[in-house]
Length: 335
Image (tube, rainbow, N blue to C red):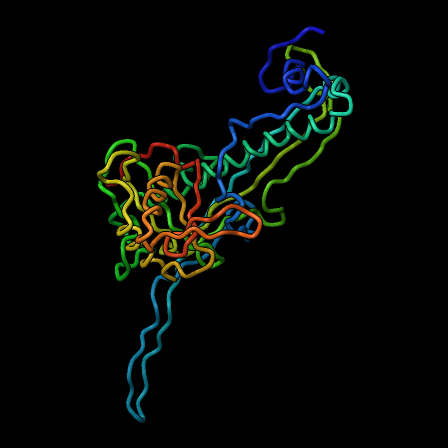
């Protein structure tokens, strides 16, 4: 049977690579393109109040309180809120597997299709994680603004409140640097959103056999089609809940990860890191810098706790540290 080299669909060559020639069984495959992005599975996600956007409010001022004397009153007062609107995006892709390929796979047909679908789920997770950190409506009108776009100044007060502290701190590096994020997740803090009357997370629909376009113009073939959708956006109700240490050098000994900077930012969170939904996100290079400090038994900032059914979890002052490979992107320096 001839092979056709194509992109976007699966070929007989793909099937041959997956099967052991000695027994026809499915081979173990090292998923070399898989990435760690736990942010897409642990962030709370809530239904938006609109179909395309979510409209929330952010407290801008408190009511005034005054002392009063007997037989005297106080003036009326009220707190003020400002509206905050967050857009959402639709991420979508489809897998197409020629029915003849699955017939040739025999008893492995289900496993072959499942493996192909798993690759699409991984790609979807990577796309959403990248958007959460680096999305920019200015660059893509179909996207939403991610954390890096929202918090790109070291001299802007969170929520416009000059009585609080700046939530972006510079480590001093320049050129191709990275960031570490400390985030308190929660309904009144920061969370993902999905459109009203839809579902949160990845929606997978098996469309069964479909007539699809062939590689050659004006041709068609029958394929098993799976549709993947993920509707989501990012809503930050309280900007104090997002703290960023930026301009961190990835290597060397200067302008790198700093325990002191992280303690400063953690204490600027509303709950000072004591909220159980607080997480620290970094790339592998910064995690390595943390691990090196962890081996110093006298450094009490770092702990590694065992889980009953999983690997040890590194914590910085009690807050779980999560590696996110989406943060491998070289960032623009923050002024």
